[in-house]
Amino acid sequence: MSVALRTQMFLFLISLSSRTGLSRYIEDNEAADGLYSLLSLDQKRESEDFIFRRPLRCLDMLATDGYFTFAASQPQLACAAFIIAGPSEVISLELSDVNIDCSAGDFIKMFDGWVLKGEKFPSRQDHQLPLHQRYTDYCSSAAPAATSRSSQNVAMIFFRIHSPNSGFTLAVRKLHNPFPCNIMSQSPEGSFTMVMPHQRRNCSFSIIYPVEIRLTDLSLGQAKSNEVSPKRKVWAGCSGSGDYVELLGGNGVDTSMMFPMADLCFSLTGLAQMKIGCDNSVVRLVSSGNYINRVSFQYRLLEQRELPKTRENALDNFCSVE
Image (cartoon, rainbow, N blue to C red; front, side, top):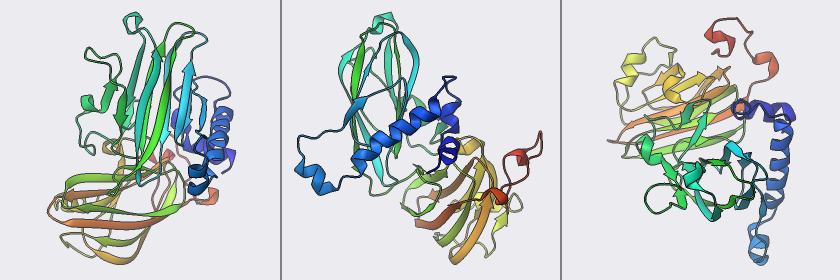
């Protein structure tokens, strides 16, 4: 992946810090994590004494299992580590060797999802837990909480440490998820199938790139019509059906704040495609719980010549649809 694409994928992360060298530092992390990912499962099992370890930085991106140790050399007052797994995985986090002073204002908080530029993924509407239950606070008044498990393939920790030589170790493990829901894509190109079996739940597949999305198969409990509804023309019809798929675009990660591009509330077999020229493109499956709903799709990165021309003070400045 080119530096330009990496920069685009993590533009939200960049906005969290004014530190210089962040793009280079993300590349270094990716290279380090990639060494472990090159090993086959058999090789990992044969090397029982090999456990991936590296230091954890104040602003970090983790994409592999392992142990990550943070040791403060100076006060670090606004730190965060973003963890991402494969689409069909959830994340287990465990703290150990914790040496912080909660009474002095230090803290470590684990979050079920991501927080970027003040927006949360998954959104409140799409997550099964209320917001306060998605935080695990090590410095809580009860016994310190040292473990957390995500509901989707992304999680994160926030931490603040005042005293040098304080720190902790974070263990990251990825676990299989038989019914993945609310996925953040690691790649600008690929394919996926979301299935919702008799659950009243909304599931989003978020791609932090402008992409072309092709729906290849859609099976819903109710059939309303045989037309894709562009933008807002029959938006109320599908949203009232209880079971539908919508395509969203925007420059944030909260689906409730994104722009509706199209919705479909009928079953189809074959291609329905749309180009979404946004920083974030989303396929969202809304289910009433009465049926088994399924949507399959492919997506690819839009080339530079396919991106919309910018217009100031307008949504089209970052978002268009074809």
